[in-house]
Picture 1 (cartoon, rainbow, N blue to C red):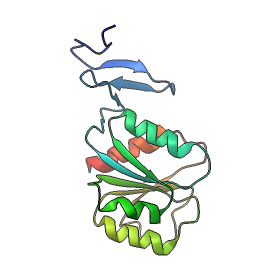
Picture 2: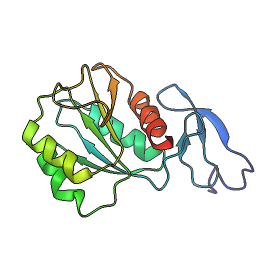
Picture 3: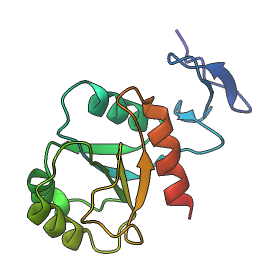
Length: 154
C-alpha cells in the first residue's frame, strides 16, 4: 500500500493521537506544531523521574523528527556528551539532581541551548544560563516540545 504522504503537494492537517491539531510534513511524515519541525536536531534528555513522561517526551520529540538520547541522570548524560553533536539538552528538575554532576554536565555542554522543566527551577541554576519551563506531573509532552522548538528558533 502506498504511503499516505506520497504525492501530497502540501502538509496535511490532522489531529494527532493526543487530540491536538498537528501538521504532518508531507516529505518525511514528521509531525509539526505551529510550523516547527525538529528534523536534524539531536536532543539530550535527562529525566530520572518515575513514570512514563520521559518516554512520552522522547516519542513526541522523535515524532517531530528529532533524534534523542534519554539518560536517567546527569552522570549518565555526561558519558555521551563527547560522542554526539547535541543541538540542545532538556533536563527534568523535579527530582533531586546531584548538583555536582549537574554542574559538570552543564560545563561539558558549553553554550548549548538548555531547557529545564519541572514544578520549580533548581536554586543552584542561574536562569540566564538556561530556559526554565514550569510544568506539572500531568503536563502534555507536546508542551515541552513546543518550548524546545522555540528555544532552538532563538
